[in-house]
Length: 385
Length: 122
Image 1 (cartoon, rainbow over the protein chains, first blue to last red):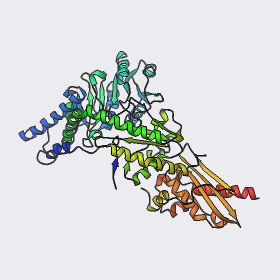
Image 2 (cartoon, rainbow over the protein chains, first blue to last red):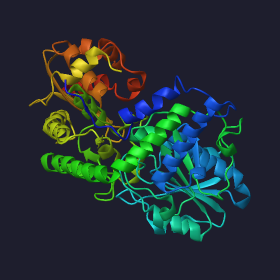
Image 3 (cartoon, each protein chain N blue to C red):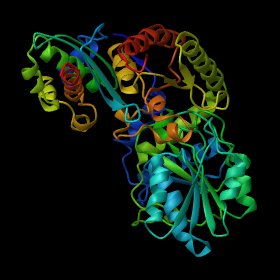
Image 4 (tube, rainbow over the protein chains, first blue to last red):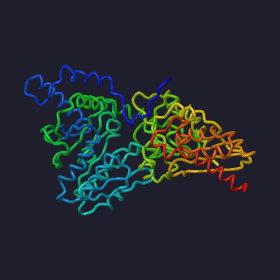
């Protein structure tokens, strides 16, 4: 059976070139980068080279990059450690209703520890409006965390404008760029932000590695305590192969970016248009234009997402959904509810995310098999009256 | 995650549709929680002569609906009234724990259809 992977927002395969670069650091060049002997210095160099590669992709300085175990740790540190380190300035933080749980649950942790948090709404296209942010700011607000691109509906946030509001009010700004890193151009200086989280496995690097960009002068404590690695910002022996892989993935992403943006935007449009024109009672979720290239998210009325996924799976197509059954809870995705969809519509969500190896043939295969699947489920549905 | 039997019923559901002249109709669940099961029965000589379902929901919801119709078709009302959600799940070789409470309502839909019939016929 032909396998078609359309879940690149969940994870991506490690690029062969990245894999080849990583390999020696598991075996021959295994030394601890903190060791004094000369072979270990090679490893130290590799880690520092990776730092430069990451910095280059987002227009940061190498010393502004802290390696972490992934996007979740970076989000936790950006929010929890920043808030605790700067609590003498205030105890109020602001985030949005469509953040990843790594951000939302970090905010909850702070609420349970004496902080206050305002979760601002988004509009129906899944975008935070600058006026909404402005209204939520209080004299004791110390941190604003708004994601760059949404993992479920693909909407890209006006980070530059939002960060400017934060700057005018002398509030630190963090963005979770896990879904946009390596997919669209990112320039931390142009965006004017203090912190940014990224994750390697979302753009063809290995799992278990990510980073936090921390603008020079932004004070932040540690989440993990112990050794003095990462300029005392993150204790623990460096995940050298992971870090080397992240660096290489950044280098490749930088080289491929313009071509990939154009190709995936076109391919995503072909898929979206194909779905919307062949399947009635279907709506696109998220922003129609300002979205992550190759990210397609739709809701089909009268049917449920998990059923769609399982039928696609039978045909070799791998995708995801924000329905309750796939979220592991009784509610559909908080993101779909935040853009104002009624629960019964949100249950019929389908997310197809394309990547560098996705082809026109893959897209056309999905367009061929998806309409009959939806039709079949609708014939079974009591909601079609 | 799902047993082979669940997948088999999900991919090839039995007795999908609606009945003309149904003698009893039952519907449980709500669209907010993501599962609605609609069952129609025709009762003759105290037997479930025909049964059809329509279900909005996940694979477990569809498979349990299909299974319950298969279990009671041709059975007497007394036998059908003994069918529980648990029995349906067992007949499918079990369901994942999270599905036991939210998507395992097919027997409730059946009982509601029987109740509807009994209410009309008394």
